[in-house]
Image (cartoon, one colour):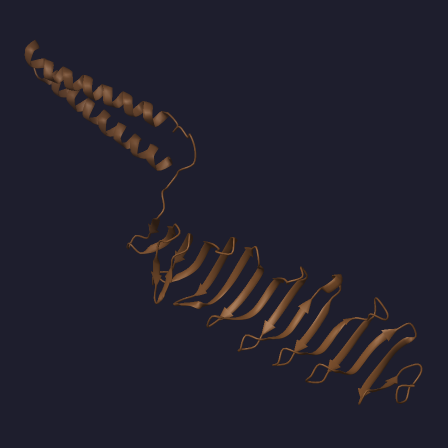
Length: 262
């Protein structure tokens, strides 16, 4: 608005200058009434234009509602390169070998690579992706959808880390290996913290959690490749204990030492 007002003020100043010049000409010319009429008409026209512009410059714009723009549309820089692109479902935006055809808004860098996508997810809800330059498959995604609520980190289109809500509603952090398999995790089942490690067969082999036998105390467990418990250490009412399992027998060390399960 400020730039428009300044432009109008400049126009008014120019018209005032022209008005002064016309008045000077009319005063210097000694002509009859019939010849003077065109100059009189010009003077009136200039005066009217000055009055209109002055009124427009002094009158604030009328705002009846937000500006509405019909998609698709683009915002470009001074060189004509796209900065911001908005489209509806079914439209297409190409970025290298990738094609975006989802309803949403996209930010492009100076090389015209899509680096941010804010889209209407097919799963319902919103999804924001921040992508590596010229590599849409290496990205960080933030989603609030019917089936997923959280943040994912992906490289070469493989998920590496997930932070959000688990399948049962617990808060979770999952770390995956290069094959996309979960190998470490942090979760809050029953509002209690648990840290777990899985092997390549997706079998838990180590767990750190609150002790079930002594709530408020900690417990550590280690399993063999098949998931069978072979070692545990936990707090209990008498202090703590460490147990080893071998061939179905349990050997524990604590305030009361047990031998072969006794």
